[in-house]
Length: 292
Image 1 (cartoon, rainbow, N blue to C red):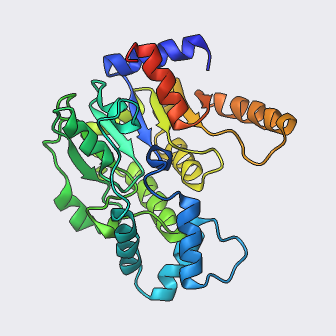
Image 2: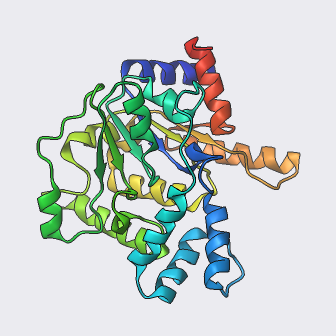
């Protein structure tokens, strides 16, 4: 990232003019990665295909094999619940670091409660909201909170891909991703949109986004990014930042070529890439904030 990109990001975080998008890399070392979870489930259900590292594909097979996708999701949540929680007293912990900023909305594609817990630890009063993509129209209408108002002391944590509080809400299988995107596209085209609360839409469309914890090769990031492009057309108006791991398993020269291509590709959509781990990014951000 260039110095101007850092200046713009720090200003946005300090002033509340930024919306973080939290991915699985935020929980590195605490929760299993998508790859690890995929391999576990592939062995558990005797997944017959060669690629056992694609979690959406493996979970699709597991849901069909079990005959009950919600039961499978409940088992996934039990696995994750047994992993513990981050140390929110650690100033370098990613959720704790983001909780220090005066931000009113946090978007997460993770199922855990870590962001809300970190905000509570800072003396704030977060409200967790789950995207109701999995409900029928009548149930969605009943869930709409017209009084929802995000504030920096009462921030909204919007679980775009579901939450541990409701197993049905998890977007985890290929079928879930397809249904989620179809429903979100239909919802955006409708007059009375319900899936993304009216109160938080400006934080998606009018503010810079900070994607943190995703990989450019990650299925979730690609589905999320393409979905935003198609359903939230205003998203391209601001300059955004994405924290990304370098392409893996490549010799140095090919890695540099890959990074150059990907940097230029996402720059077309006004996304600046920070190449490094979440911890690397958080360490540099703390340094620039003077937080030691």
